[in-house]
Amino acid sequence: MPDGSLSQMDLKYLQQAVDISRHALEDGGNTPFGALVVANGEIVGEGTSSVVKLRDPTAHAEVMALRASGQALGRHLFEDGVMYASSEPCPMCLVACYWARIPRLVFGASSRDVAAHGFEDLQLYRELTLPNDHRSLQEEGADGEIKTDAVSVLKAWADGLPEPVVPKL
Image 1 (cartoon, rainbow, N blue to C red):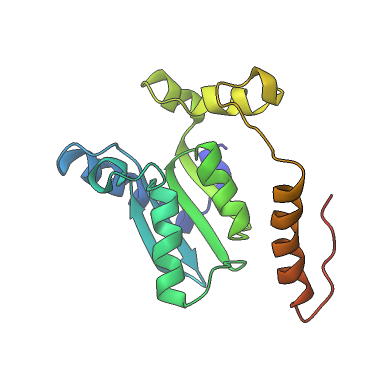
Image 2 (spheres, rainbow, N blue to C red; image 1 turned 45 degrees about the horizontal axis):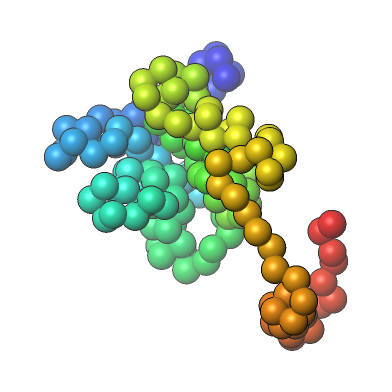
């Protein structure tokens, strides 16, 4: 993503995300990541990597920014938002942006830059392309009665919706 394609407003918000990452590093040695969500021209949520401080492996900067945005706006979907991140998001954070329906993501350092400085993002992206039986995390799905029971809970949820569910197979 060349800087030339970014607006002055994009550069302003992206610089703020980078500044958040710098403050995270300077404030007790947190990992150096920062993010913010902008909706309708206003910052609605900021986040810094709080993994170590909160002892929470999901407390990445982008996730924290999404959480703060949800609290500020009283909703969980941000179709009107832009995520600005100091670095290209890891797979978890990228998918969190998809779940939040963020339509646009602007980042500073690339995943290669992040990997060059010791973070596993590229390794995780690569692992997710492998078949399940070649991944370091072994996934096992149930079958039989417990699977039927688990599916019944999903069906009950879908049956309670005002509109029929459209399968996403």
